[in-house]
Image 1 (tube, rainbow, N blue to C red):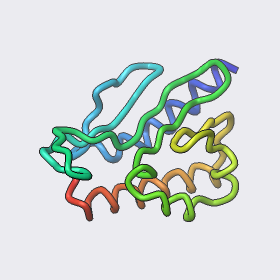
Image 2 (image 1 turned 90 degrees about the horizontal axis):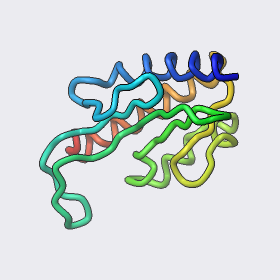
Image 3 (image 1 turned 45 degrees about the vertical axis):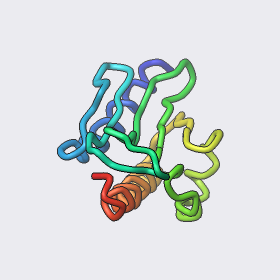
Image 4 (image 1 turned 135 degrees about the vertical axis):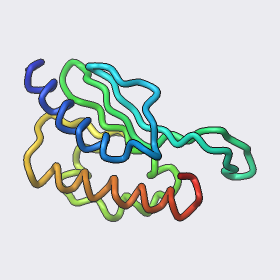
Length: 124
């Protein structure tokens, strides 16, 4: 199980790394990876110097895929395919226990839409 989770984590990390530059990781470890936009912005009247985009962490029984654009626009949830949506636990964390081409494609699609949203809002 642990080996399989490591493979899933590494594959998803490769996909997330495609968004590095302009996004940057705060954590880039063998079991945890995240991407942030470091830019002076204002969200809901609050000034921020950074905004979280997405991240991964290996847990005991799944890889947690954190997708923060959902907080910026809850309607993004409507574009998730049923296979990906059933892995959503809470508002922004997906529990990934397997990864096939279909699910990988859906994750890529979600990241692309989130990146477009952040760019449109001037957060990247």
